Picture (cartoon, one colour):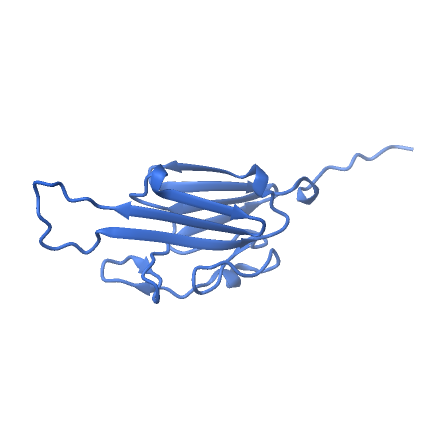
Length: 158
């Protein structure tokens, strides 16, 4: 998966520089840009709050959008997806527990919190959304509403 965010044909999901969603379906890939800081380990983090921003690929096709988010170490029970009328928020937590017989002398990460938010186009049908977590990759599929999907028109011969 690529580092950063890419948008499909019309940018059905957009976000601002804080990892929060802003804009509409008309926003192009330029609206997907965000400011990130890079830590010493090469990870990306939100500069102000300390919450990590997982890299997400946004792929749009004629029938909807698919979001692929890197969420390594996040288990299904520590993952929270909130899909509202025009927004999607992804929250995940990783807790690296030290076994009782061991003592942590130095730890850069004990508790990690990932968060990412997107504004969604009104053309998307959140009621039909689906999500699956496989090998640390969260795949969210949100189809377009029936009236927004392309349809074939029959031509009658007179």
